Image (spheres, rainbow, N blue to C red):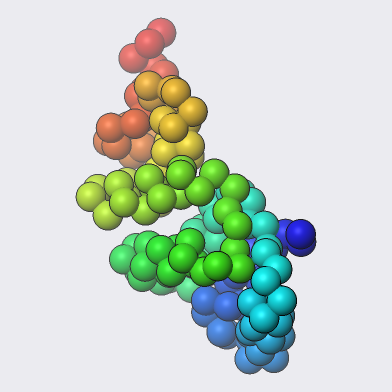
Length: 135
């Protein structure tokens, strides 16, 4: 099995570089025909969210829709799939930063009560807690 880098997912989703997007499409179609899988690390999902938000200014709803569709693709095998599914379903219900919320979802599903942080904005989300409140 081969893993995918962030730029491959971004080309597939955004199609901003026509030649590269075409290459990704052909590779994905061939993998589908041959019943091959590609590994998608959790860090690639996190970085993809960051790129789509910060570089392409794609809306939160569109990012979550895109991730929902990627998760359903039979050629993609996601690290921490349960975490990603939890993140997608819960991120629709709140205004937390998507990257922060993916981190918090991973921690939550690993048995953590909260993520300690100095980030005051993140503390508005239910899975974060100010470390200063604990000192």
